[in-house]
Amino acid sequence: MLKAPHASSPFWKLHRQGARLNRALFRWSDGRVGGTFRGAPVLLLDHVGRRSGAARTNPLIYLADDQNLVIVASKGGTDTHPAWFHNLMSMATTEVELVGGVRRRVRPRVAEGAERERLWTRLVQIYRPYADYATYTDREIPVVVLEPVGDQQSSQ
Image 1 (cartoon, rainbow, N blue to C red):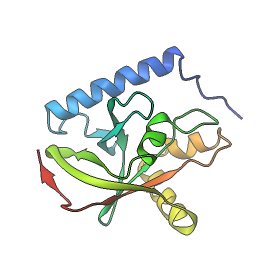
Image 2 (cartoon, helix red, strand yellow):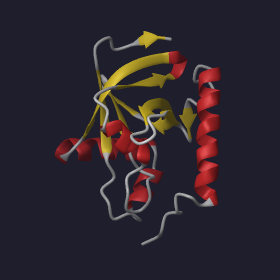
Image 3 (cartoon, one colour):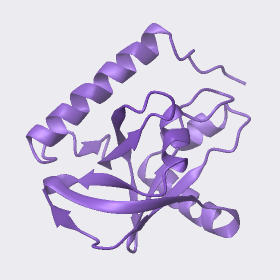
Image 4 (cartoon, rainbow, N blue to C red):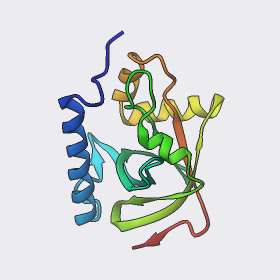
């Protein structure tokens, strides 16, 4: 089994800087820049740090599934889920931003069983590295369904 880079390694520092740049470009251009990554659509996920209470935003690849949006908690390390996943799952609702400045209020839940398998297959089709990453982690990578809450779409 291959080992993923440690969270404090130069790779992850560069990854975090790239995520900040992606977020800034996405917002500046209403998603015309940074709205896709290697052909897969990207959204901005808002969450709050469980310990710090600080507002955070992560650019993440997503899959549209009817009214829901689906994301994957892939890169937390080989044996841990990413911090944003834990932050998100501790919140009852949050917001995501889509291309064009469209914001949606969503409720997160983890897909399980047949639903997870169906969504995982579709996610791997739009972004192959998820399947590659799954081969070098022992943990089951969570597939998170973001269900719409209240007014499903509103512009900023």
